[in-house]
Length: 174
Image (cartoon, rainbow, N blue to C red; front, side, top):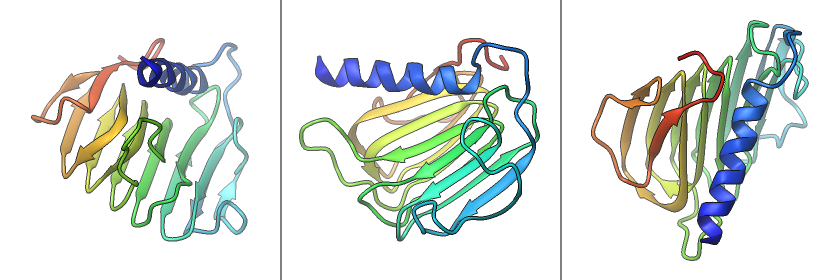
């Protein structure tokens, strides 16, 4: 039950960050973090969380955020976790690879997550490749291993683990 509550809260937070209230658009920007924990990002334009393109990756991970200014809350890509080899990309959306919260969660290693106009949260797991267009994907149990997930607007395009759950992003593109 705790896992479901934490997962719901994280998913709601991602959806809110994507499609928050107000009509003002975030400023354009590109931000890349090669594993500096957000301390030495490389980029142009607005690189602040909540208003532009924000990338944050812990040592051994990479994150790239691209924001054109279409989203009211900016773009976030983060791989700030205890694992390594995670590559996270977000274009006008939110992509997060974080440590799992469920008991026995696998340390997040070697995951590739890409989101375009949507939100993706992967908590734990290893060797997963997730591509999300316009939807909201959650994987909170930390048990997903070596899965490939491609979805568009909350609809699965490829077969995947039951642990990776696509859905529609409230107020989103689709």
